[in-house]
Length: 289
Image 1 (cartoon, rainbow, N blue to C red):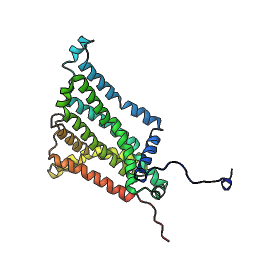
Image 2 (spheres, rainbow, N blue to C red):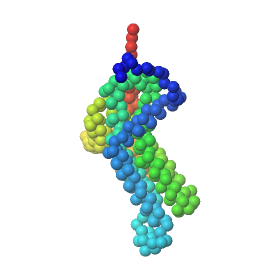
Image 3 (tube, rainbow, N blue to C red):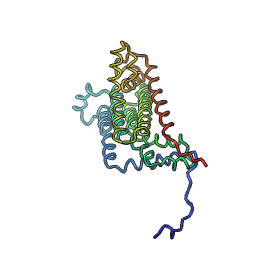
Image 4 (spheres, helix red, strand yellow):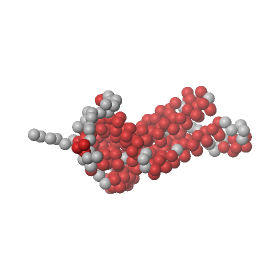
């Protein structure tokens, strides 16, 4: 049927409240992410360490039916801060690869195809657009990091008794804050790179470069300038220093040569820089008449 023979009418469905319009971007963005079979497979694979850790917790606490196994693992498995810190490190690494797979395609297609004016001509602000895209990554990475981590913490608390829960609250807080810091940092960086670099493979490579090449630049800076301030250029080292501080310096034992406030300062500067790039790149068209 020709277009001029069609009859068009106004939309009569339910309207999302204006304050929640950004959630529409998140909902459809997550749906689009999981259209990829590769993403689905990788997402399911990220839960393998969680399943293994859950089995270890169960065997460690409730293995009466296998006394020989229980005796063998008593000195091998200890469910403590180190256990959950290692799990958080593994899951955060897997979450980083998830962000590298999905993040570069969240903003750049809208820029390349000129879709931003269509978004921003609706009751949707620039902040709402960025928030909607940010929540896509934040939700995906949360499902891989702190949500299953806290579920395992609760499993350990149930099996070990209420005393364990009361005496190890710092572990849960460290996992929550450590994962949140990692998620915000990776998500904002991925969005900023996606807005700045329009070619998706280069954007993904840039995210890897910022984290992994930064350590080399930091070490080179320290060597050339005879200083320790180059450590702030290593985002992976900075994040690990924050995690070590959250776990009361009992787990990672890295040699971060600066006070922990410099690590927090680096993270905040990365957040502000990423938001500044998004503020510059995310803009609608201005029509003057």
